[in-house]
Length: 112
Length: 116
Image 1 (spheres, chains in turn yellow, purple):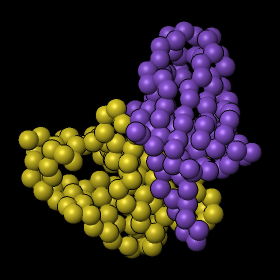
Image 2: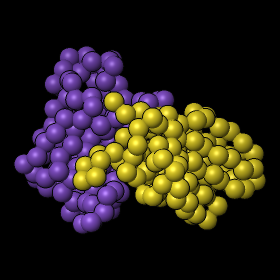
Image 3: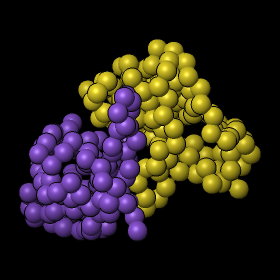
């Protein structure tokens, strides 16, 4: 069974601070996705990274896929209360088989 | 209206009862999934269906069954519910574009199931 470990599991920081969330595995993934989930709702896709070493920016969020395609990180600059939520990484393991393996999740709270 | 809907949104039941969770989608997607979410474990795949005639087990299918009644409907059943099936259940759909290696999954709002 492939595992995706996220760290930290919980993170609570002040508004305006920077933070990084990590997603690590011993398995190689063909692509990796990041989702955000808010209370009472299902996860919503933020980004997909496909190429080893790829960096994608979404406003204050920066996503990076590791060179070996085994890990990824999410960096948030100047965090805002609206960033609060559960962040989930999800890996796609095989070409043509688009099942997702989800990470363990990071619950982020931004304190105003 | 939401593209992916789940009913019921909340359910409390007793050990041994049969429970059905329903999922409907208006996105026109062929692929549908059922996940359960537990704290600290992320989402784990129970069953998935790539079209109406295709049903596949996920990583935690024991104790669950599914039915794909139509392209738009995918239901999950617990034949005899037990307390460790208490969790948040999500339905999702996807429709990967030709030539891509990945897909975006669209999730319903979830069903919170408690088995006493």
